[in-house]
Image 1 (cartoon, each protein chain N blue to C red):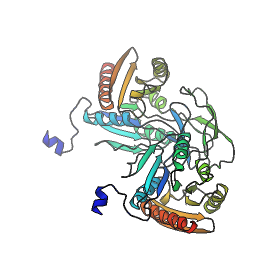
Image 2: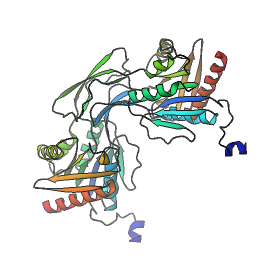
Image 3: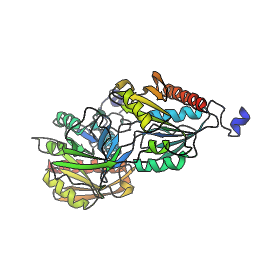
Image 4: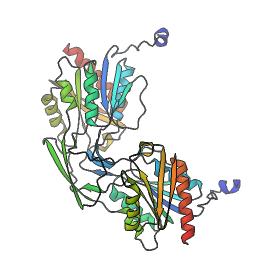
Length: 229
Length: 229
């Protein structure tokens, strides 16, 4: 074991030899040089998944929106700002990975017209039009021989209903739903709880630290991948 | 000096006995429970001002939007999220302060209708209407016997023109302009450069660390206050 560690051999573990691509954090969609639209996301859950996947022996690539978190040891981190940037980085790496976990809170919309100069606040009202961003998760899910694809669903109501619909509609292998209206497990919390669904089954991962929930989710992913092989 | 330090007496310095209120960071304006509009701002300049004002002997209250910075020693920090929250905190404290430095990148607009549930992404386009936020800086500047009021102007073009216009229009005592299109001194940089204007004068504070620029600006403020007494 000492020789392996010295030689830089990846640690043996349940995910040994697996390559895992994870997205984390929010994206920011520029409106003008000073304003942007974003989603609440601390990045903690995605970073916890990256950290635990490395501990379990995986090779981990983390595509991260703007967050204030240190990169977990052993993780290859790629920084992006917008959903378009994240889409590009993910599509480039997805085909070389065994698992894709889309944990980022990607902005669904971007400004239709990004202004090159700061919009002056002369008007009492400001009306802005936003257009749909590319759907990173759906695009990976429909790849030929793509990775085992896991989505997240952050909802404030009818959580199970929306999650199961998203699983089927996007053709995912698994979806992890959380109720962000619960402040114990909300956006900047250190704890989380997930209700995980796949075709023909589901499992509750009860409230625990994000690191513990990350480990439990990785174990589920590994079990489903083995079952499907 | 040792006895004074042990007794908790404020340090002697050029701002000894002065009470300074500073805003820092961005504000976030909720669109729904997961989406928000915000402005680029790391909070570094406001936090540098707070730190240097304490070193110069002032009593400092820092009203801070969401940032990832530690509170400088000796600073009384009040955390806020939205412009409305920041307005309330500032108006409550402004009358008890000698100086107000508005360094925060306050969102000029908020969503006209904040949605209680997450907006579903069914539509190809999303049109949102925003309405004007209260003008914290102008409201402090027009207070009877209010503090010496210093604004910031982050601009991407015609910086001096906009800054002088803002100084006069809002009735400020001083304004510090910076060109955020210059990436050396932009939003997340550790350096800054300011062009400071007051009625009948101006001074350039050349590129330096934000701590050095903060000290230079505090010295200018102190000089102007003395000159106006």
